[in-house]
Length: 361
Ligand code: RAM
Image 1: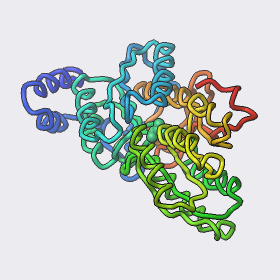
Image 2: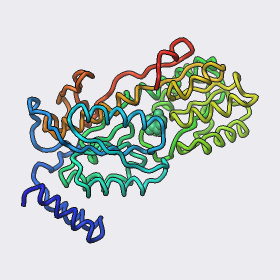
Image 3: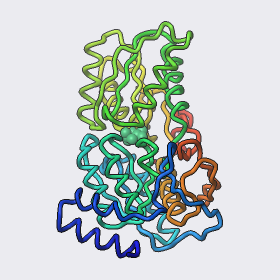
Image 4: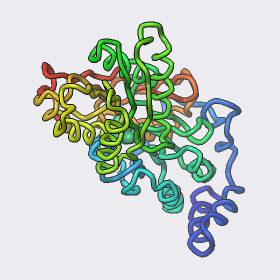
């Protein structure tokens, strides 16, 4: 049976029976091309052809952690623009809560059933998603994670916003400077399962082990679940529980904005320092009113664009996701795939009162 026919009949089977069962059954009929390499990313066993023409008419589904999060709106718009330019189609599906892990799994299954050519996924919970993503790959769909990764065997490539190590360490460095390397600090994260935040937090903890931070103490990591209200309440809770708190790092655009909102309206404004990852448009007000000195981020639209271009390069056979392969990402230039199938967008930008007005996202 030709792969396209196989995929069509699988979809019919999937609607007629339980989706999980049907996809498992269909997974059995895969071609050699889909066999995964041992270790590293799930790069196809086949060889990449760097001169292969980029295919047109593909459909790439974007599945962010959360659809109504302005960060993902910018990222996915970047993906949409790139796909239009490449003559392919874009669609976006996803949950409205960053803790709806089973919802994300259902969306992966739906995209598989709809036979998209590729999907770009930001993982809420890597453990929950893996089986569904592997099933998608068995059905010939290329899987790119962007923003928040799974384990390498569950996707073909990960488009990373910046080196996770740089992000974790620089956030501690930024806060340390602001509090004079002294005092209690806390972290306000997103969901407890989020791969990206958890990786950055591990590097923050490692950075804090260095002798220059011996007078700084991380007292708590709180989770606001990328929900504005929960993040606001968690900030309030942190400041009540730790009255001597000197600083907060919030490595989430939703968290830092809510924390800034709380701090700016409280007696802690100017006393408790706040940094992390935010968008210039969300944070401008709080930089201007003195609540926040400096924070960082990458351009989400560029992240989405690179995810889309990676998906098309994978679907066209230009790359398979193996370390050392290179491809041209349009006007973004050439990218090389690193260890474990990771493609890094570049260095993050630090925003402060001096430069924030130059950015609009
Ligand atoms: C939130 C999400 C996203 C993260 C940014 C910094 O929007 O948690 O995954 O990359 O913050």
